[in-house]
Image 1 (cartoon, each protein chain N blue to C red):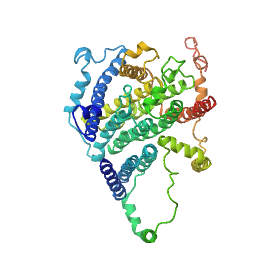
Image 2 (image 1 turned 90 degrees about the horizontal axis):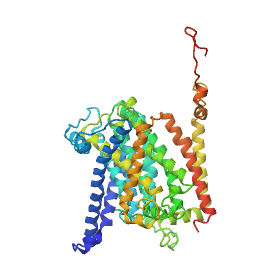
Image 3 (image 1 turned 135 degrees about the vertical axis):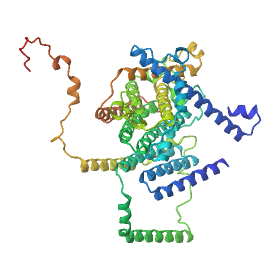
Image 4 (image 1 turned 90 degrees about the vertical axis):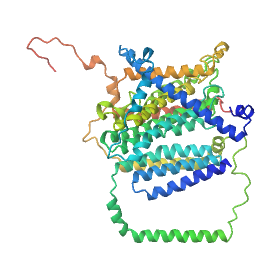
Length: 349
Length: 206
């Protein structure tokens, strides 16, 4: 895009880069917001279908405009700040959650070369940014100066750190096989990975268990059911969001769903070939890469909703046990296994 | 040009947030300022081309260490009146530490003015390998030249971790029921429930 501004509009190169980057950010952030609104609608429709209900069906055709109506509603509401709250941090917390949820999308490749920041530490960047997500929750819980949000903040801090450790090991397995931290290079490494025809690491016998662990960990990392202990409504009202109203609440809401979409995208990129078609077969390449990518994201989002509609919530000690006593040793063992296999077969030479 | 702007932005923000870490009255605010300082340090690392170190700084310090700081500081309800009462008592110690620091600073500046130590001429041994990324270069050095030192550092950390666990570990079997998860998972409905057809008024044998 920099070349376009430089050649067509005759800007100097610094200025063209600046304008192109701003355009790129808007091109990612605005459709993402729209996608979040539609995905909330999809989520509600899927739960409704699984519970044999109709779901939102009043606002617009098939209820498609429900999320926008909700957005307008919260926008027009009054922002209430509890008098005992720490005002500055109380208002910063939702902004942190929302910003962090958007930032990680900078390195996600939507098609071959269609990425805002093609950096060689892309996966580490995502890990770094997603580890910041916990601050929004912890700060909001503390700044609310209220019991339930505080409990929720404590739970969130422990939960997100626990699952990040095993996610780190899973990412190492993928990186060892792909030989790069760059997300585009990881996708390219999956071309024809399974028997020369299937695009994706999931077809690999050694990496498939890691994908299962990653899917479950990504649900825990985004605090979706069955791991939504941070906002367990039967115990904590609404967890860290209890004292929030109006737009500050909506920012949490948008950030949460943007994070869920990011985790779906990561599942697609790391194990299912990102923007590559499922099979390495020429006619499938006629469909543009971003369509495959979005189809994969939606597939994983369906799995997320499916789980949310059907699986009961974990108890807190069960959550910690799963993270530390099962996933961590398992993924650590798998790192050794995979690196051993790759050394033995001469993958690195 | 843009490097200079970015450098001064990160540097000024880092020093300011470092100062605010010390000056903030509320310990939670202190930790949050510290996090901002870490962030700006990561920005400086990126400017000098050490993107791997920058990411590690954010992942390890911001993502894990500072969260634990915040966790602890939030849990401890620190009483400021008590802290200020301790100020007078610890004043002489503080003065002594400050004097040592000033002496070191004067010595350091004096040594600098006397001329730099001859540490050898930069021969490019510490430069990144050409055509390879940060991660490759650090990995090659860490797992090649310094393998044993690296492994030793890992062992020392392991020992420290084991030590911390041993110090805080308490046997709690006495008053807490143990849950055998494997046994629970292996249970089948046929072992756990029985179907009976009791006589009216006869009750069930348990």
